[in-house]
Length: 293
Image (cartoon, rainbow, N blue to C red):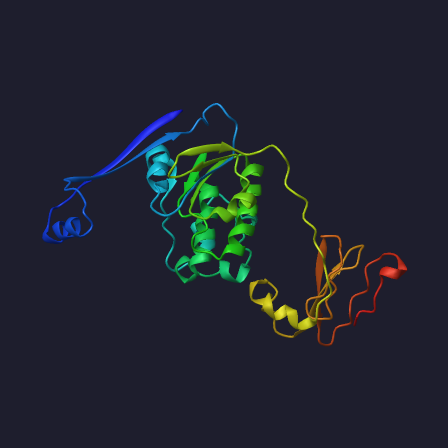
């Protein structure tokens, strides 16, 4: 669809208050209220995965998205009222696929996955809907009010995660949003800016490099993250839980944490009262630590 002319028209009931308003602001009498947009969207012959329709409130974003992509517009899903949010996904998906999809959209809280959809916060509900849209949508999904109910930091990080997931899966997603701060994080292939209907393509230059500093923190920092971790609720009789890397130094959850760069593959050992601690994994001597460290 190279060019589209869209008109939204509604009748105006000329009540007493409408007449007063026309006199107060010297508005000409009218029988109808109309808005028109000329949209140039040349995306049929270009390869793309992510699109963004952005503009202030009332600029016609949702109207354009509904008129051009109404069949792909995600309006919501039916979620089980008395079961976890995991049970709302297609029956053919495995738990690993569901967990990976939820994590890829920034919803990485296994304890929250156990709750019904109605018990989630608005931000969690949005990310659950986004994950389900990626799971059930066909060739393309259109999401209105994208990142409007989450704080801006979560919106930016979540946009980057969504972009990575959509491109890896080879699907198509059009986000409709009033926030311009997600453009650099979402990195869409094309942007339609309303109300001018200005169409731009993504520049070919790569993203700037991100510098990440990792620091050692105190043990009480775990309080900020434990509610989202699957090991927060331990079994009865377990005294402490630690993570051991196979070959490299790792970090411990309830000991003095070390946040050094490490190999991702780790396994969990539980020290139960009365049991002898397991032996240390093999590795260079300078990697080995006493079991109580």
